[in-house]
Length: 326
Image 1 (cartoon, rainbow, N blue to C red):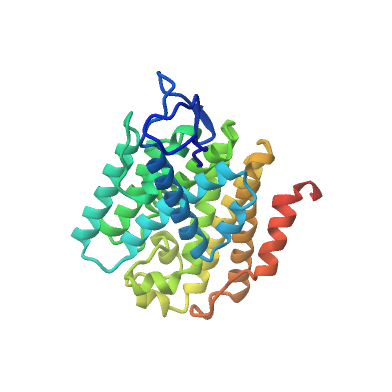
Image 2 (cartoon, rainbow, N blue to C red):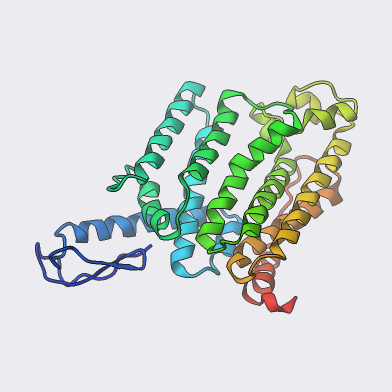
């Protein structure tokens, strides 16, 4: 979000309007608040911070969001930066108690953003103030993301039941989708179905891609029902990674991911296409990653599976900028 120009940095310069997140506001007496220049600089710094966080990720997310109008794009960058920061807490090397305290601090930060006069303490919190008001981002969705991170910290997920895995995916990815559709401007009921199904599909793809990295942190997200189906009774990550039946488990989870991609596609067919273009770009990127993982058969867990930059750019062009091609 951007603050519009003010007349001058003077203490009480007369100016009938100032822009906040694309909306015109005016003080009751028509005077510009002397703190506006400071706030303007703070918002520019916050926007720059979340943009840098998103760009530094090196993921397809940055390029997918580039196709959005500026205000919606900055909202998505702010949402991404929030997710990145709480995820880094959960994945970090700090003791569990410290991680819990830092996530609790983020809960307080989010709660504070919904007060009439918010005073965020982080740059990312500052960047979220405008989007929350402009697009009606829901507090419970931010808190659900934190709930998901707390599952990683408090319970140290290993071979969860399918129901627990679905809850986890809905929190760490589905809730992000619900925030995103508001930022995209997709308000129809089917957009919610799309967001939740796509969130589950993306997270399951991440799980299938990051098996080795998660195991190194002592985590195992493969559902116990699938492990038991293929004769794996251990929930020790390294033992499961070495088990000859692991590829069969992964194929089963890939089928579940595909079912969620198909559900997302079906819901997308009942939505206006324009607002969800960026999400479709993400969906096509991740579905291609899942296809390539399936081709490798999970035989070499250390081999990186990526989508090349030319392919990512083609997906942006094909599904983001020229969606009418089909």
